[in-house]
Image (tube, rainbow, N blue to C red):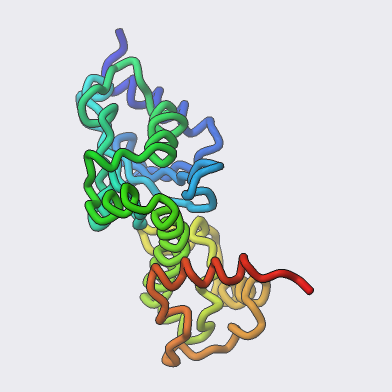
Length: 236
């Protein structure tokens, strides 16, 4: 039987060998971030979340601690803390499970089949039970709303948004190290400008940060409704 420390190392290496992007914290084996994509054929498809994982000293005999860093609208995820209500993690965990199981089975199942009868987000649970279609629209709108505002918050710390305006809302979060608040790639001040030149919409480039954009004024529900309007337009 392998020691807990050896098992932690083996399971983390196994996860790193998959398609998941893993970022260790302080080069340790017990705390790290994993980039998790919403499962296909679900309202969460297209969403990308950073999951913070903490492995206890007794892992795998004790379950890992799992939490969403950027917000997600889900009955079984606390909207503020990101903590997860998942039986297989909190109650029925077994040493037979590993980290790959968490990201390939348990979390996708959580997003595919929410359990509104045991909620951490009462509002999401009530909406799901009352109006499933409305719940799914809210999920889709929140994916855009939360990711955009999360990115804007990061960019505002560096005041880049004052130079590039809404262009930064199209910034790829995977290129930024949230733990150390710095770029993962070697770069200088030319990189942000080049990124905006490549990815920003023409009307967004040069928008002053002090000018409040229409995107920043939208609520989660308005994001969802605006997406529906765009989807409903028919080309002439």
